[in-house]
View 1 (cartoon, rainbow, N blue to C red):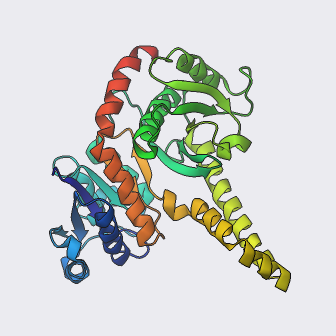
View 2: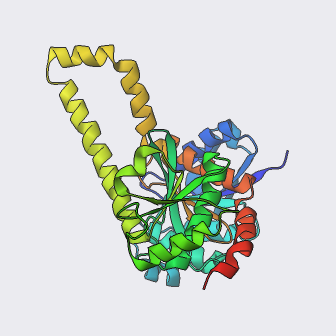
Length: 338
């Protein structure tokens, strides 16, 4: 059995290293062909790893240095070369197939760009993640890496998103749309319209379906939604806030009277299914697409179940050769980019 080697920033995240190790043990049950390398303080990690029999073959790379959540990326780049995060990213160049961190997002992006560089044909990496929809999941990018974009960036994001949805979500021919203020061709900024025209001409390699509006993101009509990082981040935070508001409001409503409590009891199975579908831990694992290596960002405050899911994203991308698949598509589309 060929092993998939994954590096873990064991010291990154609100509840590291305990959650990182526990999440790795859960992921190992799902994916027995993973080999883990933990980067962090060996005195802390040894007893944690030793408590899980299925992590007995894991490797530890010792370092006392780690990045704090509020460290500025500019400062970290100058002094953080020997931190657990930096060493884990470096390992992707020649040892591991992927790395996962729940640490500082800005530092993770800065180190990833510094050590791994972008794939030839990609101008800027993008952050991609999945959301629940009425029909399953949707991949959306960019979620904050690039505040300003041009048509070429959007085309590259579309190709990366399609490859991501194909491998991680498991969709054979993902439907791709550009996020816009309307579905009509005359709507939107000029660079969005220009990107749309080019994507229409790439029908042999991408299943482009035109524009989608913000209120249709969760309808599940398309599998990949492409936008700039500014708009994408606002959409992400709005969705998270709305989901939190709805969930909390529902909980309060179900506590108000004996009749509402009875209603909850009768609908318990359906409500639990709904909660499972909306559980953010299930969709944990944002990916920095466009790099010469697989880097997955876990939510800093997740638990072991969520961290295991982030590892699962890294596993799928490594096992099914995401980088090579993307490079092939980019070689075909280069002539369309100006």
